[in-house]
Image 1 (cartoon, helix red, strand yellow):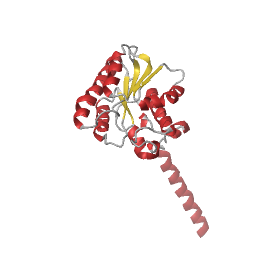
Image 2 (cartoon, rainbow, N blue to C red; image 1 turned 180 degrees about the vertical axis):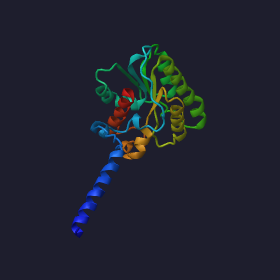
Image 3 (tube, rainbow, N blue to C red; image 1 turned 90 degrees about the horizontal axis):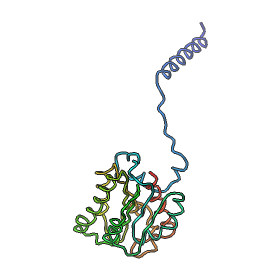
Image 4 (spheres, rainbow, N blue to C red; image 1 turned 90 degrees about the vertical axis):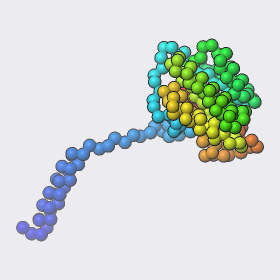
Amino acid sequence: MDVFAALRQWAIRTERRVEALVGRVSPRPVAVQPLDAMDAPLAASRDPAPTCALPPPTQRAQAGVLVIGDSLTAGMKPKLTRQMVGAPLEVNGRPGRPLQEGMAIYEATAVKPRVVEMGLFTNNDPASWHVQNELKPAIQRTVDDARARGGRVVWATIASDQSYDEANAVIHQMARDNCDVMRVVEWAEAVRADPSLVADDPYKKHPNDRGYQLRADMFAAAARE
């Protein structure tokens, strides 16, 4: 046998061994993200806090979305309304609204829909006492209600020129502890990633038009999850 014939036989044997090995290995499936999901803005689905899936809706939970908030909610209302066409939606926002007033509206809503979204505490003192004795019990109240009615509650983190780090940490921790009924809109994280969203506001709270659109997108995504 000449050298070339030997090389050809060696190549054939090697190819067969490779094919045999490949046949024993199942290729790993590759998850391909849909284009619309890739193009979506920051949303609750990117929230690192929850670690468990939300349960399916129950018959106890009335369909719909209720949003309670302050000027940020008022500012995004037209954009959120366009996002949620066809879904029962109530958006109640007032500039300067503190947590206590927002919770009074929450308590006065006798029949709450499946999804309640809260954009509050931006107009409250971020000191630790207020976080632990006002914000945390308010979140717990909404969590307990969501679990009782078979629904869900969403709270937004807070961006400001003041430090709301403790408040945001409490929101994240309570979402982790109650991930069966609670989700987070990562507003503070969105602003940290793109400070231009609030660059026109000296208090770094109120976004520009692009920021209101992003906030509306995030609240809409959290409501649909």
